[in-house]
Amino acid sequence: MPDLLIQRGHVVLPDGARQADIAVSGGRIESISKPGQRLSAGNFGRVLDATGMVVLPGAIDVHVHFRVPGGERKEDWESGSMAALAGGVTTVLDMPNTAPPTTTLQALEDKRHRIAPQARVNWGLFMGATADNLDEVKRARNIAGLKIYMGSTTGGLLLYQDAPLENIFEHYSGLIAVHAEDEQIIRANSLAFQESVDPLVHGRIRTITSARRATERAIGLARRFGRPVHICHMSTAEELDIVTDTRQYGVTCEVTPHHLVLNEQAVVEIGTLAKMNPPLRFREDNDALWAGLADGRVDCVATDHAPHLLAEKMGGYWEAPSGVPGVQHMLPILLDGVHFGRLTLERVAHATAQRPAELFGIRGKGRIEVGYDADLVLASMGDAHPVRLRDVLSRCGWTPYEGMNLYGWPEVTILGGEVVYDRGKFPTVVRGSEVTF
Image (cartoon, rainbow, N blue to C red):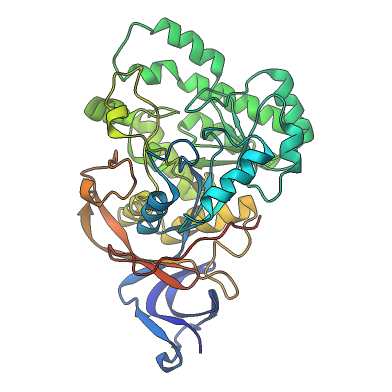
């Protein structure tokens, strides 16, 4: 007997959205009803009525920092997973700037050992680039790719010198993901503004020019050596123009929810809570990134979920760490964009599930299609509801989106055919699995 039937949902399929029933068996999608047809409920162990709800593929967040090992006081895989599931995110790819960083085979295997008993979502791992670890990275099995930090940020990973960068782009055949900020510009501007304590100075130090030059440099290396490169957390209209002009060379990109809906006004309002790398920009950058997401020039949305404790974030400008939580609120923000006509449901599904799976070669995920894993989210598109502090599930306990009224909220999240989140409750604990790339 099939395990689960989802009835009467407005299902976002690869070829468009329509009303359909979905049958799930053995953790995978067994069948999808044809237009105008229904599946009989009598053949199923459990039936979910999705009337009035949108059914999307579970979101794949390709850029999170779940802080294990070394930062468990801010987040771990239990709290991070719960925040993800409440936000309709069923798979995450974790970044390497932990303590110690994921730069060796030993560190990679230790991280896997720590994550497996805790994770309640599916997961994959990046390794981080140093000047001398390329041989280790090339021997690693089943990683998402290699992350290069061209500008300094949380943790000690940093690589901006010509020779090691050229060596990586010439000899690493996997996907290269880049934090594209120019370290030399950052250092020069940090000296120039060292007496300032205004949080707005962050955008004067990590300028649009810094982002543009690093992006141009990374793409130049990728073109020179014929490698794919993925530009992380793109924040400016200028970067979008550069990526658009070079897409034929295998350049891809992501944007974050905070770079879509927040700008320098948020820094004025909440100060160092809005400090992140790269910084918040301007309203015209918000508008350009929304437009790029809507028309497909932006490949995917990823949160750069980077929690820090509230006490740390409330320090002075120079002391407060960069980073904000986001995995719980990515889909609500994008579904709110659907409500106001910025996006279609099909674009949301493509940018949060199908395209991430394609970019990183994640098997069995990203689409509502027969044979694919039954990682699904049922979302309500009805009345607006505020983002409330008491609902935040990340261990850090705060969100930069507090008070925003959003249309479109995940109601039910399904992982491998099991209902793991249901309207604020977690009825079943399912351990996620490491994805296969």
